Length: 403
Image (cartoon, rainbow, N blue to C red; front, side, top):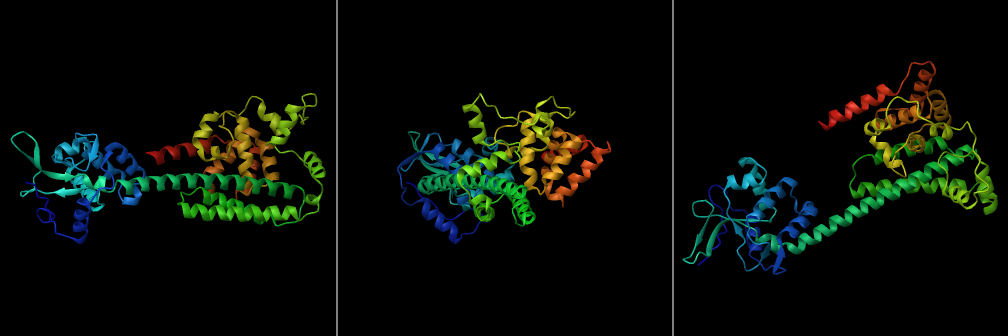
């Protein structure tokens, strides 16, 4: 003879939510049985839909470990009755007061229900053959009742994660296009308010460093998309961009090359080895291929300035990769080409790249990145500046934040 009480033991009062949870726990399960650990993994993925934290799930994991069977079954015994001491040990040594708080959160979320005994203790009553006839503790059957909802929440969370990743990827690509097209238009003297466009790019870059939800990320992506369309329309309206494809191709090949070579140029060089691409021997790209003169190890720069690496097409293994990534983001930060050229000439490409990486790491604190770089360039020309202290300061600050 078994009876499931709906009222709690002791000073805990009856609430409408408690009665609703108790009724749902005794309702029909959508599926007869489910693997308890697979269901738990799905709950971890979709936990925000149920309003539980990772610490709550730690306690639920401990409760599930007391259930002997691997599956939750509708007709089987689903109540576990560990002591607080045993439960705390399996919850990685959690304090009893903390344990009670997380158990209450699981009950409130409707993932477990209490089966309180007459004296509030957790124990089990057995028949003469040793089979359980009544158990007082925590009933895990609500997990089986909510199995379908848990699975749907997990899929929704995975879809949202994939959507955020897709939005962020598209946003980065569109920012890159907007920046490079703006650089091209500015270098070619096309009439437009390029300073305003570069300022907007710098603002969008700062916003993209924040941890945004999917709605905020969508809004930021839309702003980047509008800016890219604006830049594209400016270029399409010019006489230089309205010629034939062949004329445009010759124009692009004769313009000042950027250090990031296009895929078209790379394919052409592979297809026509008898006509190698000629590059000025004094270019910054040739300089960075030589042995770096900077005294700071590249690995130290990357550790101190992790925000730069997402802008590199490939993992940064050499100083040339750092230079390419720094050249890409300097325009997004509002640093003009002339300021960048002066910095590379005064400091060397490696030092200038490390400085820009350090500036990106604390770009929210710099009101005028272009003017700041020119100031450092002037100090470097006088022999009064080295990027070493800047990098070490960022490294120390990062370590302090971790601790």
